[in-house]
Image (tube, rainbow, N blue to C red; front, side):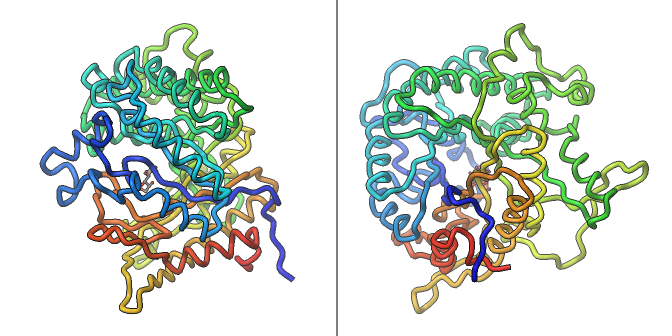
Length: 455
Ligand code: GCO
């Protein structure tokens, strides 16, 4: 008798993002995004790759949804390209751009797949970047106006919304490290000010969804952050892991609480203000009333965790994994515990339902002479991670859904097409799709609501 701890209403899905799969970079009146500009820069992306064509999902979405249906997906997390909808970022709406998402949503619903719409997954309008981008104090308002356009068009059929995907990345990698578009290396103060504007944008977008939606909306966001898990199951190591997730790092932006506390609690954590010191953003009165909006779920993108033990005075100390420990093609460590500890931390700290908005791995997959993609490692990886997620649920952590990253192989930002994250293999020369073994396996997981994971 198979048993499952996943609740009966649990959502099983997969995710992708506009720039990573759509292609059609200048079709039908689309404006340029910062990624269109960034990928043209020499040396910015591995082997000079770009998302110009990507998976050509813009033209092949119907075929792709057929495959999603075959896998039995209950939900699909897509993102809307802001400059496709508003070529200049503000003002004029591009009817052919918004019509694409209209058709996409209709086609998903025909297949009984619930659309979860991310409003911003990094493809910021180039025109607005020229006006200062996230550093411009008007940027939150620009995002809210765009949100209103999308919500007016889709909310009769869409009820699940995600405002921002990973501000830690588009702000941190895009404005501090410079490895992602728009490729800036600004002072930490400017970076955190841009981050503050992104948080305001989140708040205004939540308001824009609530006031314009045609049906009750479920709204969340999808941040990422350092996940620590205990090196041993001693009480001390467990406490150290939790402390590690609470910590605000003053020298980088990979924090959970720096970004999450304003959104849920309405203030920056004291410890963070101390750690960032003079680099902390300037906050106007009323800002936190905008940033702190009631949200319905806390999304989290979790791939890997950091083994942590209690060091001197119980302080969290990172443990180095033994040589030869399992890792993915990206060289990210295979650490399934991250899904248990990460969701547990967020649910306890923010007291909100949690949705795993991304989890997955890149493998060195190819199509065999027999026409199959035997990705045994992806299956084993997912099985381990999902069993840890089930353990969290069993212990009372309120996890509502799981979205595999990604539905199909795609453009992995600065890494180009080096990494294959999909359940579906994409041959970029021919655009042929092939379901990987993991896709068939995931179908079984969905059908059995997790019972097929075994124990
Ligand atoms: C992210 C992005 C995805 C990536 C994925 C793998 O979370 O970084 O949302 O677009 O492709 O995470 O790196």
